Image 1: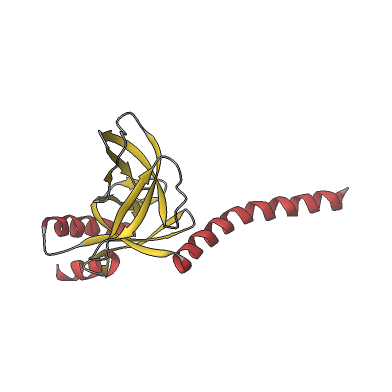
Image 2: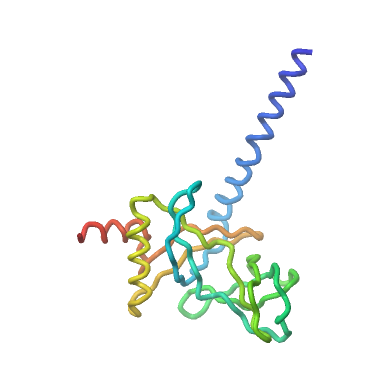
Length: 186
């Protein structure tokens, strides 16, 4: 009986460890094998008492004009991705159901619509940072948004329905490095 309890306990521990391990593997696999998309941002800086400081990213890509009326629809949508001439992500199609096309997509949430234009919120809208750098990151990003000569974007990898926000960049400089430069100026 004692042997059976030890085996069951071992199996319980194995199951508990396999779930987070699978989640970590899936995100790492997406970053290694997925397609990278750059999403232009418009952030703010809130705090989550359980997860720490982060930048909330509001993306310029937040709506798409369709051929059907979306005015009454609220719920999940599939946003199919392509790249514009400058290398930034753009929506090529938005659908209430998954389409049978060979193109990367992300699942988003339709939050409001007007006529044939669907407005959505992308799922990778939080970038967590060291709490000592988060405020300076917020200031840097806000200043970048006001300066039309600078570009701020989130680098997101997409693979098999999984989207992972890898980093935030200001003029192709990773946000942590940009903040270090910002802090050294003071």
